[in-house]
Length: 492
Image (cartoon, rainbow, N blue to C red; front, side, top):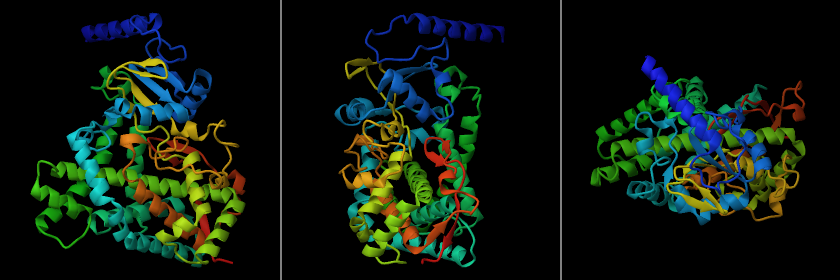
């Protein structure tokens, strides 16, 4: 034990010396705050890293280098710098991912499309999603399913309306998203509609997103890996294990059936597995589906919840959207996907929600596989790269009244969320852009639009709209800390 203590002391002392005197550092690194010995800049992260990093960028620049323990991290906080990383030098910054310790469980990082290095397997899985699972043709063929699930959401809200009861809009949106994805993938519901079981599933998924995004001492000081001092890996193993066991059971059940008449994602995957099991193994199928659940459900449910919160705080904006829906679709009608193109103000509300509340505020971390030059600075090999999408969305040099929810700003510009306009990158950009973007956008618009077009909504009379709690729960996704409980009212 004495030897172990001695080794730890020597390592920490050596690291402190190097941090203070900068031995061996290139001379043209990006600007950086003054680090403390051993911990570097860890003390500057705070409980809301996306906000803390944005404040630091205002002082030290939009290309900023931090030392987080032993982890060198590049923080990108401007449109120009984001374009360099995500487009112009995409390959240099996208070939590999920074793998947080939290995902080194159940072989997650070895099979998940989100963390695989760009190579043969990554290209095959991504092509499978884009050309087979979420192609335009596939999405057109499955739009009846999305319409059905939104109809179920409206029926659920209608029951609350008739009994003058409140709706937890985040829970309702999550259950609809879960039901939609489970039917798209398995042709069945994983939980009962809007019951306690879906709430439990939501809690597990929420815990996973929070744990992955939580600052982890093991990532900053790898020597602590054996101890897992914050218990993040242990909790992640438990949460992910729960979801994987459900998926494994469903996959094995379909395997046992042999050929199936279902026309769903699992059937597409099993057909490829049967023809070439080495190209698409059971493990790849399981984690591909897990990725779809993790990313899809949370993007949909959190964005609907944030959008409703902002509309409740700004009744005039909600009224304007309802007026557009009435004129284009007709009051009290569930909107269809072909209606969305005729609803520019609704689309602007979705974009403005993404601007103010991006689902992943610090895009999934990238890694500089080799030393690379960026904006005249040298970025060392192995540097973790964080793109602060939240900071870019709050940049007052781009967005007038950047702290105000003003959807009309998007009626006057052509900025979109599909990865080509770096002012607004909720889905990322370049090779690593989220492949679920087309499905998310289709579902978001019809879900939010139908909620607005079928009910009037009111807060508890004790809550003033401008006083509505907008606190965040930080993780890899930006969740609302406290649920919105609102009452659907009959349309006037």
